[in-house]
Image (cartoon, rainbow, N blue to C red; front, top):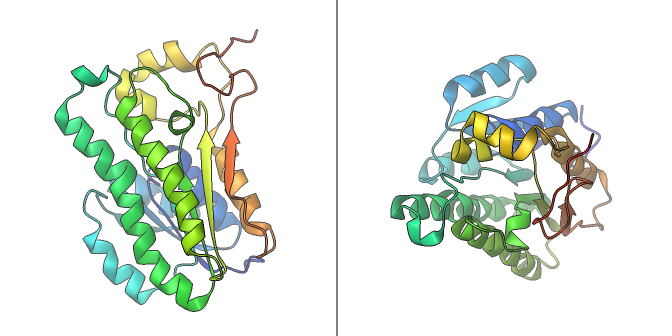
Length: 246
């Protein structure tokens, strides 16, 4: 049984990386967890491992989630799914990649949040998490659209808190620096990501982000951790410098 004031959670992007770690951690905290992602096989494997409820869905279209939110009291939503198809100058970015990042990184979490809030506000209970990025807080080269979507999420969280005053619904943005996930492997390839980003550096692990979310959930209802910026110890907050450690 959960010691938290919540019973049910929904995590997007749960097929791998940060989302997978969050889903596992929330199950361990006693929550019933709906794990959303595009990779049905990966979700089934996660379900066998920690008893999440797998939901295979492409978040470019959230219409299939209406029934879930109408029929289930979702107390915690973690909008984690993110997309970085390629690292390139904006002028060289494929228009399809621009649309995909806006759809997955911005439109989808807003739509999911809106679906969740109807019940949360009525019950006066709920916690919305948004996994942003340091790229939405500080400029990074060759990720202009990705950074724009994450910056929009950050401002959305600030404004949403204003809208939700008095409802008892909490909103938390997590803006991490370099986390060792598949995000950059999609853009750079496995070898390229390891060589450029991970092999010589100490990165944040997905489990670290999951633990931050679990901690925020345990705080009293009157306490809302509005934003957590978390970086590797060896990365400057601006993101432009990270040092190797022997």
